[in-house]
Amino acid sequence: MTAHRYAIFETAGGFCGIAWNDVGITRFQLPTKSQDSTEKLLLRRIPAAQPAAPPAEIQEAIANVKRYFSGETVDFSTVKLDLEGQDDFFRDIYAAARRVGYGRTTTYGTIAKELGKGPEAARDVGQAMAKNPVALIIPCHRVLAAGGKLGGFSAPGGSTSKARMLELEGVRLTPPEPAQQSLGF
Image (cartoon, rainbow, N blue to C red; front, side, top):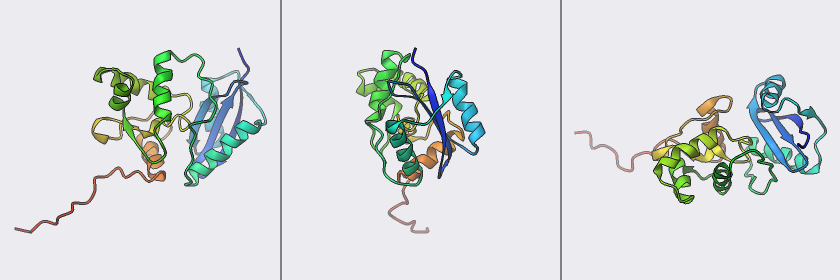
C-alpha cells in the first residue's frame, strides 16, 4: 500500500485538504471554516496520512482549487486520481461525473442511463456521489436529483454548500421569471 501524504490550504471558500500517494490524489476535503476541522475530516478517512510539502502536480491542483473558489472557471477532468478500493461501477459513475463540465449539471438518472442502467440505478449513482472521495475534482455537486432538484450533499454545509458551488459556476437553481405578467383580473 502506498503511503498517503496531505496538505491543508486556505481558499476564498475556507480551508480545504488534499491527500495523495505516488499514483495520484486519493482524497479531497471541501472547505470548512478552520484548518483544524478540515484536517480532522480528512484524517478521519485516511488516519495514517502524514503532512507533507505537495509535489508539483499537487501544487497545481491546489492552485486550481484556489482559483475555483475565487470564481474562476477551472477544469479538473485531467487531474490524476487514485481510486483504488472503489468498485468498477462506482469508477464508471465517477468517470461519467467528471465529464460534466463547469457550469453544467446532470441528474443521477441521466448518469445511470448513460452507463446503460435502468432508472433504479439512479440510487446507486446517488450513493457513489455521497461516497465521492475527491469531491470537486469529481464534481458530484453538478449531479442533481430528478427534475433538477438540488438533492443531497454529504460535504460540510450540506446542500447549501452544493448550491453555493453551483452558483459559483453560474448555475441558476431557481426557476426563471415568468415571461408574461399576470393580467390582474
